[in-house]
Length: 209
Image 1 (cartoon, one colour):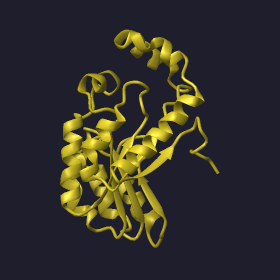
Image 2 (tube, one colour):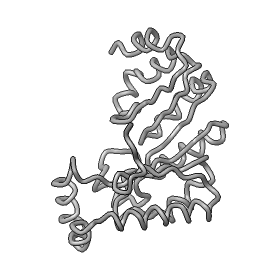
Image 3 (cartoon, rainbow, N blue to C red):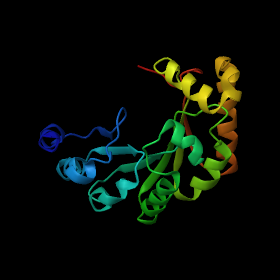
Image 4 (spheres, rainbow, N blue to C red):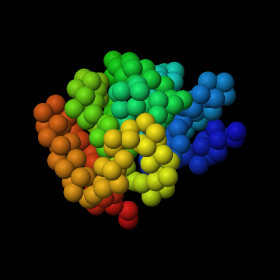
């Protein structure tokens, strides 16, 4: 609850990068009531390069505060535009249409915007469709592969229940599959004239230093 006070102290006088956020979401439904993210943005040093990533159209609430920052990038996560697939893996998140509309509104206000496609759901995420729908409203697209290490049981249960025809394909996912996905993404980036950023663990494009 004291995050706004902490960020005022910790960001004062600094010129680094702040990310909201990588392992959570700054615009969870409860923020409609508590507005902690809004208060954090009000207290944060505007000289910081600021990156925001969310699955929620609630991000548009704070457009007035985004204008405080000299360097800010605003992103929406979209793993699929198929609502039936989304309900399986993200049952409580805002609709894909709501996210597209949020991107459109942010872009119209002149902000730097991006889409994060992560994780890519093999044989379910339609990359061509995502490029086609989001390209008018984003500066770049970022991509992450699916890592089964922390969630193998949950993913396979979801696949077995909802997409049983894909069960064997998920069991046989390989490095070669992700190499092909990288090539597909790069070709789509060229086709739609969009910068792409690829962060794949399986192919080594995501590196930890």
